Every structure is written in structure tokens, then in C-alpha cells.
Image 1: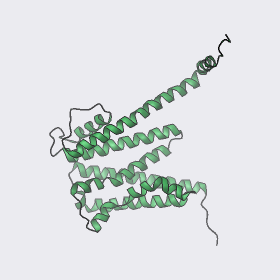
Image 2: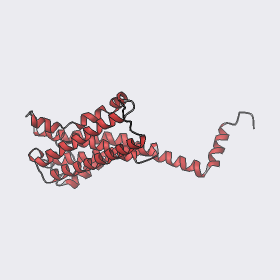
Image 3: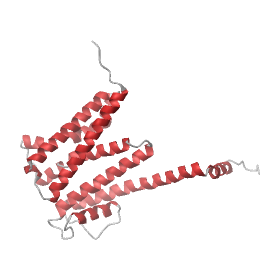
Image 4: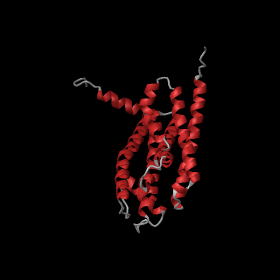
Length: 247
């Protein structure tokens, strides 16, 4: 019995196709949740959203198992990507199917689990599109940071607008999230527990992410100078290696 082997070219085509599909579904899910949030639609009562969310999670799980089948070292792939599988499970549909009791606030956060999987997929796809390893890492971090800011602004709007006069619309929530992530701060203060937790998370993300941009820009300037002004760097190198007393 012969086993059909897939060529490296076919693997690349299959992976790229899955990346594009996951990317499109992730963006569609983000748009869907954004519209529901802006129009105050109860997602649990929106049957179209529940079906679409199930479809997205199924595609995410298919992507995981196809990648697992194509991986040369399957245990290594599982160790590195098991978290992706956990984020791909359609928890909302399972909760609804078995009539498990959760509060509305808990269900609201569970709703964002597929979005986290989509944000990771988006960062991987964009990183995959860049050839330079440092640029790929930077782009992945940028996508993750922007995704966290956007999701946090949606949650902040949902939780703060009913009780906080400083959050009249989404623009105020987005402004607060951006300013908090940059650790600059704004004149909008959270009054709910969820809002205060988001403030800590965004500030922590900003403090971790923004130094990476400084390192990247510094590295880029150094590479530019070495390429266009090699004599300067060579003279500095020679000066460091002059033995004492040789002058």
C-alpha cells in the first residue's frame, strides 16, 4: 500500500490558502462583533451570529489539524500551538447546547475568545508576509497590540457607557484605550471593575511593546549606517583594537 506524499510546494499552497481563509474569517468576526456592540444587539439572541461564530471556530480547528498533519514533528507542533486549539473551541455554542449557566458578563468575555484566536492568526499571516525576521516579529507585535487596543475599546464601551458620563460614544472609548496603551493617560477614568482591569492590562501591554519599536528603529539606523558609511564603523573597530603602547 503506497502512501501519497505531499510536495513542499503543495504544502505551501495549502498553508497559504488556510492563512487567507482564517484571516478573512477573523476580520469578518471582528466586524460582526463591532456592529453588534455599536447597535446594542444581544449576541445570544442573534442566531446568525451564533451560527457564524460556530463556522469560524470549526474552520480554526480544521486549520489546526491540517497544520498538524503537515508538520514534520507533530509533537513539537502540538507543544507550540496547543493554545491555538483551545482558542478555537466554540465555547458559546457548547454552553448554549448543554444549557450551562453563566452570567451575561461572563458570556460577553467568552465571546471574545475566537477573536483572540483571530488576532493571533492575523499576526502570524502578516509576519509570514515579511521576509526579514526582525520586521516579521515587529509586525506581529504591532498587530497584537492594535488588536488588544481595539478589543479593549469595545469592552470598555460596553461596560462603561451605561454608568460613566465620560464615555458618551465609541470615539471616547477608543481615545481612552489608545492613551492608556501609550501610558500617557487621558481625562477619562474607568468606574467599573472591568474598566479598571482593562486599564492595567493596556498599560502593561504598552510598557512591554513600545520599547520593541525603539530597539527596531535603533537596529535599522545601525544597519543603514553600516551599509552607507562602512569606513566610519571600520575606523571605530580599528581604534578599539589598538594595543596599549603601540602608538
